[in-house]
Length: 547
Image (cartoon, rainbow, N blue to C red; front, side, top):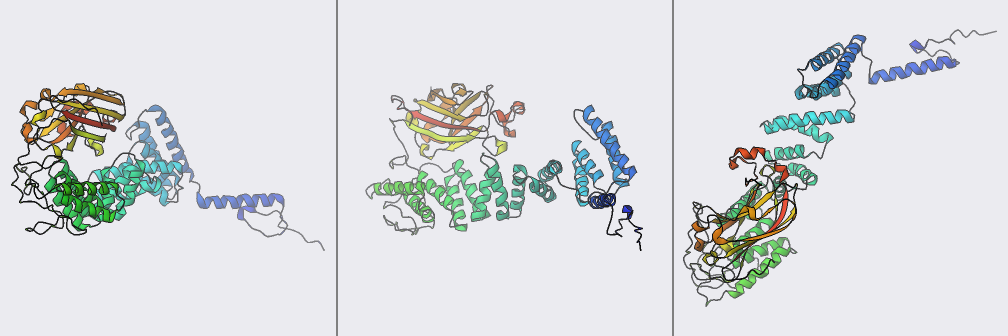
């Protein structure tokens, strides 16, 4: 009996498998239908009217790219393209394709709030994230995040900044602002990865990074006190700086950086006993620290030179923790006891008046290298090194000092009258410079009396356009403002000023106060790395050369 195979010509449109012996044509058709069904689960075709609207939107966008050099949403072609894209989205509300178009179009015309909404809708509908989507999401999220954050709406900025970092984890702008956001919350540990990312992505110094690192290690209050102490030291307010450092080390006894700065300040104030104690604190935390080892050796040597027969030897400040107020400390203190003072007679009353903003200034600072009678008065016959330092000059907007760099000079707060008729020598080694823009480098000696202008060199004498070594000299009497300086009182700091070829300070802060600064391209001048040396040579002495 013959069995009729009535189902060999299968209907693949309904995907029915009825007979085990299907023809090849039937198998091919069945496979095609199955693939189509699988594809529809990922990207279901648009309804015809939605597809037509989207195609029209894409054509208009292409025309707009050819017609306009810059793109804005109120341009006719873009206006029509966006309208067609919105029409397609309304006709196919569950489809991702129209929203992808709108995300791209709104990003192109810089309507970022709508671009963000379109991209979120695209992702909500299962849209794929490819390289193009990533790039445009970063553009949109960066603009919205930075605008919100810098506009004071920091919490609103966080989702945008997190999106940036999802696709661009090394982005400096987003990492910096996320670090600041966590600092607002006092969350130093959460701020630290973002600050580290900033440090890894840029070779320039960023004070934010150091602040976060200190806060994560030692706590926010200790970090704040330390940084305030650094500012006080730069302004010449050494007693205030030491008080702030005492607060920092009380909050964080393991703060080696604070102990080291405190030791250096005690050296500047000629208190070797207090300096030795602070150096010991550093070495207890960092036994191999070269600066602390060398500092302790110098401080102990200075203690050995102070003898009971020297009526002018003085101790200027008491180290933390404070020593007994009345009894003199032993001459050879074992650690970790409070730092001792050398045996001495009662310290004379300081002759130098305390600065106006200091209430507990230390006792008189004797001239280096040996203690002298008060008031300090030195007749020098040898040259005096003012500055020998490598510096990176950075724009103020980048966290640098801008055109004005101050270097505190505690050893020069003494009688400098023997140098008033001498010569100022200075040498500049320009190590790196971003352009060939002409620069004039000026040094000013800043007096104690803030009503008197600093004595400044002629900036045109030290001018350059490229890296190299440059040197010049000028008589101290010819410095502008030199005749108004009370040289017997010494100077508080050296100020370095960077000027352009028109002699305008290269600074981007409002304190410059001239319309000229708006036309100065800061990137032509900063960052710039130099080694600067300056030396005062008294009249009758010869210049010994640079160390």
